[in-house]
Image (cartoon, rainbow, N blue to C red; front, top):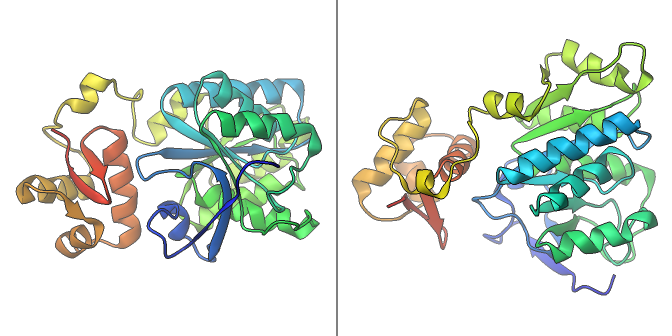
Length: 293
């Protein structure tokens, strides 16, 4: 690709914070476009390359609805479900991130070169842990999946056969302490055998984007007026503790200071800060956090 490829190390403050919380995160990321910011709410949508027309439509519609509500859609740029997820986000004029299993000097599959270009043009991002010139070896697709789930607060699986890379993405998400949502299907359809096993193993069954919002503890994404309004009472104890500390401080605080004052684990503070930003309770500027005025 002709676009400029950037490289970021895990020591950089712009390195995706949710990914850095996971085991085995890449020490370096190569990217084209705009990396996700802390106030972006990323969610991944994955599934089989050999998707049915109905599965692709479901991925497209789910991605479109979530993107309309402020989510950044993460997937792997593969044929089938991945491509439909990226396209749905673009349809909503939302942001989407594609994680590749090869160097960013080329796009795999070639059929999605135009889609990759559209992702960048719409302020999205292509990400890879592999340097220029690295071909897409089979094992790298499985390694790539941990980044897809690691960037996201939750992973949505649509049409996963018994042997599917999306199952690995779902297992990565579970190991990373993230939610996994599964759309069920016809019990006689091979494309759903892996999906149904995930449900039996404890993943959450959903039938639409509203189920996902509900399970994440959200309503529809807040309007600008709602974002500007102060939340009088928060139901989550950890969110309430963080908001109270920020309110009492009456000045922006760094994440290290918040960790010190709340005595909460880093992964909890990172998760709750993201939720509080998304709900319009707090804001982040220059790496500092404060109650939104």
